[in-house]
Length: 308
Image (cartoon, rainbow, N blue to C red; front, side, top):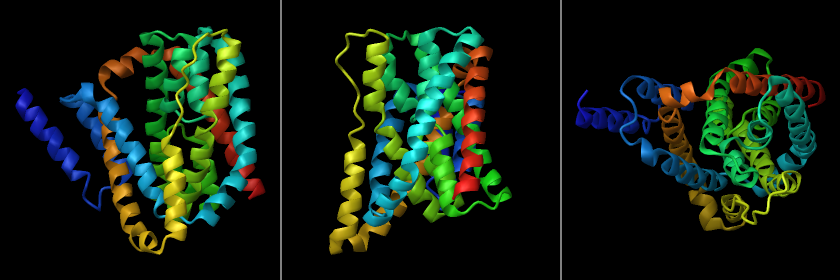
């Protein structure tokens, strides 16, 4: 296919995702369809565009949240956050050995599963000295599972008649990336989205202590640790929405625009899952990721259903 035509089709699909009737799962599926058929004509720009757009949208959604509700959600999810993060990392160490994966690769996938997907892997990778192949495989693994989770989690939530609070906490714990957490929770309901975002972003802050612990365990001398500064701006947006009358009036509008931007972000994530990425992952790393994901999903679902 002519490259110009590919670009036109891709940009038309991107514009289509701005329509209010396009849900996050549909946008993700459309992006994945294009990736596996015509390909991504702007692939080399996709990663940075996705990262920037996601962070802007997260901050934008903060303008639609109330501080007291955010604090309450954070307190509710704190226990689940601590237990599941360390439980997943410990499980990942032993299961990784069983699968015969390298210590670096197993730790990368486990970190992405435990904390916040691609962001955690991007932060941990340089610390453990991961090469390009290990980074690609670990990122590909969590992105594939993210895509599946975004599609099936709302269905499971409705099947179990989960409350907004239950689903929000479960999605934040069991789905890897912030983008897919927000997409699944937005599909489930506004309250679920607020709870899920709060709990997920509080998990993302664990990148810092986990990175420091990783540097110690892997005897890394690196001093550069990626800090998710956009979470600070999210908190400032929530505070402004709560206490500044002028912002509280326009906050819902900004939040709605951010949610639409999130749908576009998920389209770009789907479009980034090329055949090359899927092929690079391999069977054992993917199965390893699936095992960790299933364990954390089932255990957290059981606990949430029986304790909230």
